[in-house]
Image (cartoon, rainbow, N blue to C red; front, side):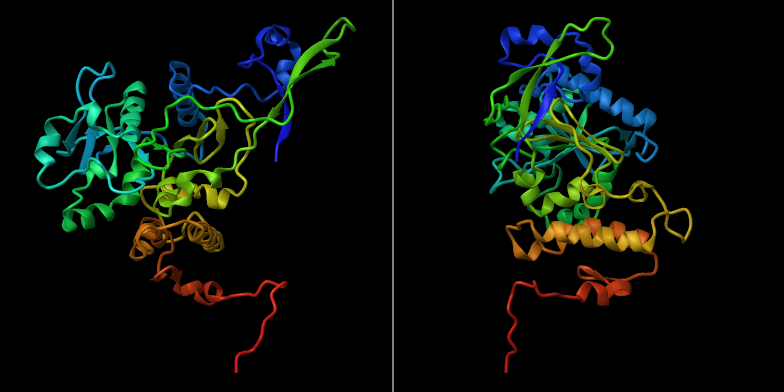
Length: 380
C-alpha cells in the first residue's frame, strides 16, 4: 500500500522544481524528506554518528555505550584509510568498542576461519578475498572510525565443535555488548553486499505541485510544495528477517543499523529513525525490541524490573516471529533461539525452560485454537 507525503527538501529527479521549496516555511511542518539512494556516503556515516550521539546523550532506556571486553576473536579492520588489510585479532583481555555483523550466509561460505587457517588469518586477509557482504562490513567499520567487528564466519573456528560450542554460549553477550549491529537486511547471500546504490521504487503517481498559504507569512501570496508518493517499507519482506538465526541477533542488539532494500534505518531501545522517507514508530515494540531490562549487566534484586506478565508476552511475540522464519537445518531449531532463551532465563528467576516453553506458563503456551472458518471433524 502506498501513501502520499510532503517533501520538504530537494529530491533527485525533480530538477528545477526543487528550487520552489528550498527554505520554504512549510518545511517545519514536514517531518519527511528525500530518501538518500546512496547509502555508502560520507553524509550517511555522519548521520549514523549523530544518531549514536543522540542515543548516548538523551535515551534513558538505552544502555550507555562503553568499552566492553572484546569477544574471543574479532576482525581488526585496520586504520580508517585502509592502509592495512583486515586480520583476525585474538583477544588478550582488551576492552574496546566493537561492531557486530548480522547477515544471511545463503549457502557455503567462500571464506571461513578453520583450525588450519587461523594463524594465517591473524596475519592478514586481503580485501579482495572477502565476499561482498563482509567487504562492505569492513568498509562501514572503518568509515565510522572503529577498529573491530565480530563476524561469525571469521570469528568462530568452523571445523571445531568445541570452539563452536564455546562461542555459541556467548552469542547473547556478543550481540548485547556490541556498540552497534550492522544488519545486511537486503542481502540474500554473503555474495550480494549491501552498500550498492538503491533503486528508486516504482511509484503509481507522479509528483505534483501543491499551492498553499503559509500561516506565518505576512502576505497572502500562495507558496508551493511538492507532494510525492511514498514507498511503504515492509521489514518482513527483507531476506534477513526470513531467517531464524538472525532474529536473536536483532533482538539482542542494543542498537541496529539496518541497510534495507530502500534506505538506511536506525533502531535502538527508544526509537526507529530513517535517513529520509516516512518515519514510523515500532508497530509492535514488544516483538521488535526487547525491554531495557535485557541489556542490564545484572538484575540487582530478585524482582525483575520487567513484570512476569510482560516477560510472558515478550516470549510469545518472539516465538510467533520465530516460527515464521526459515532454518536450513531442522536440528538448529532450539539452538538458533538459545541466546534469547538464556536472557529470558536470567530475568525469569526460578522458572524452568522446557525446550521452547516455560514451566510457569506451560498450560498457556500449550493452548491451541482452530480458525473459525475451518470445519472441524472428529476422528473415530
